[in-house]
Length: 76
Image (cartoon, rainbow, N blue to C red; front, side):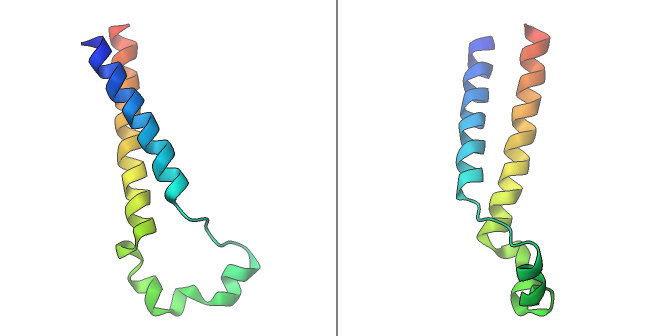
């Protein structure tokens, strides 16, 4: 049982690394303010972009990684 959970945790860790590497950088500072992204059409459909899906996947896999870590701590 402990070995299976350890393998799942390892896969979740690798998944988090890959998902974070696929995400694009966030534009911040003056260049983001000048661009006026808040008023554009793309800002309205932000939840449908690939970056939004990757961010959501990062949250879910990160939560699973945390839960698996706590389970391994309890079993340990």
